[in-house]
Length: 380
Image (cartoon, rainbow, N blue to C red; front, top):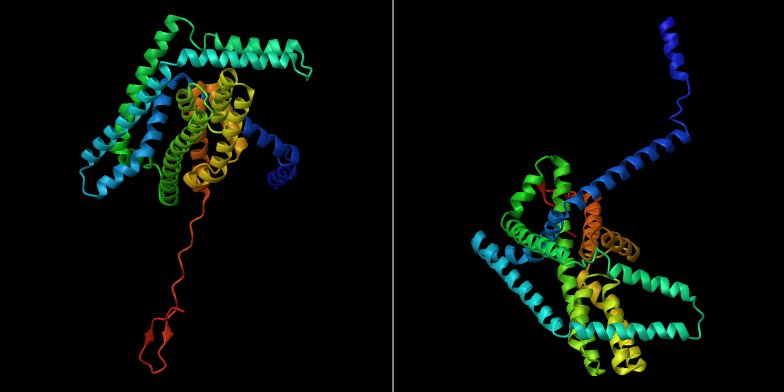
């Protein structure tokens, strides 16, 4: 009896974790634990980025080319032949694009850099002597920060750093090609192996996440390539009409920059305007800026919703934050990979939480008035 009385008294004592402050404390501790795990995971991935980046690139390319592989298999091609054909076709396309970019930019790169520097210097002089008063120390500080970044060790100013970067690039490229081939050849088996821990409803949700993520990733890559081509063609035509020198290299830079949403094409357009400012004067430079703005608006309001669909159905602020985080973590490659990773992550979360549509209820049978038994109800 005494034991029961002590037990009831212990139960009636107030629990500090059940009041409002206690619940907030528990939730805060959970959030801190999740943030710690996230930071540790990101740090670990950065340490093995030589594997992570080729893996992500191979996954993106596999998602883009997988419809061709599946189409060839449906037409009766052997799996190995369909994979090899698609793989070689992708290599030819990528090799042609990279070769074209190199030949278009290499011979005029020095002149392009010189023109951009002169244009930047003219803008800098105008800011110094312009009607708007700007603190000289702030201008010099910003300029020095850009110079320090461009000449810092992260860019690779020594031959040893350049050699190491070249070796890492070649290693990553070969690893990406190997992973890409196996993704195309055994992607279904790899995905089935990853789904082995799931059962029942969780297995159904995981399968839905896989299909949705693959659709979104493939659509993003193909859509981005189309948008980059359209931007570079129309801006290149505008540069040729306006008589801006180095129009072809600038159009190539627009094509590359378009793979970085929001800011890539804009930065390339600013570079084209700087070149036009030096070679053609301020009026043509203003026309170049106007052409870039018009092309970007047409692309964002008309072309992107058609070719992207739901692939990039995330807010511009999320894209900007993802770009910033990717650039900080992995430089220009991180900026290119950040947006598709964010889009696929959001699509996977929505697919996992999506409720299955209930099956339509069976139409009840009508009784035969003549007693011949039940007959199926007719559709209205």
